[in-house]
Image 1 (cartoon, helix red, strand yellow):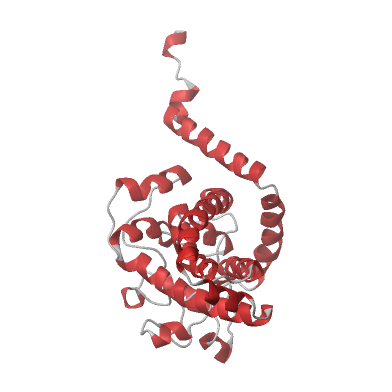
Image 2: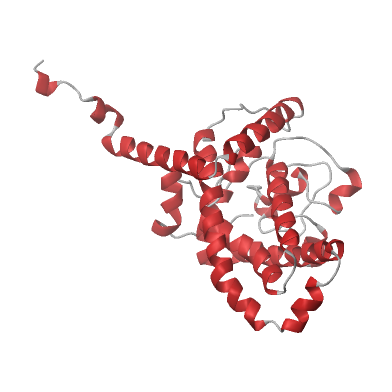
Length: 291
């Protein structure tokens, strides 16, 4: 065989695939460089959740399951991109909303004790977050971005990171903007974001914990796994981030006793790879058909 006829390693792997892999790698390294604390954070979370999911597994599942690399990129890169988008929204939209709220109301709220502010901000954020999340399932253009998250077919702590940054920026803006506009202390804003992040990771985890009567009061893996269920009877349910009582009040609670979903995901296949999933909402239409 002459040299010109030898199969090129670039052709074997696919030049396009190599370019995509290189671009994804650069984004991953860039996000870590921009927020170096992410390395420590991911390692700590892995040290906590991987053993927990092995010992208390809801269902048998490999640690390095299908798609784990893509979800790791989501976890790291989206953390950075969402932060950038959220800051931009707060600086622009938040400033306008804050200017529209009477100063006397902001002064009264900001003058309260931090504990009371935290409680009020938490309740406000939960209600706004519920409706923002529900809108991402019922408004077609929002669902196109949110379905990236619902394409998860194997639930675990790392799956919580599979989100589109535009979707995550929208849902977090629904939570943050009211707090900013009304003049709550920055501590209230920061505390809720930290709690929301940790809680989101936990409720996606592959664990079989049961919380008895508490499952009606706080969001648990049992509660949120039904939100990701592939069973049509569970579609469009369990939107609350922290308090299932909101779903009870608004008629969207689905929490069968002693049962867990048999499967997860949506009825349409998701593209493979981080960049492909990032572009997915822009190139294909989607309908709000899944929980």
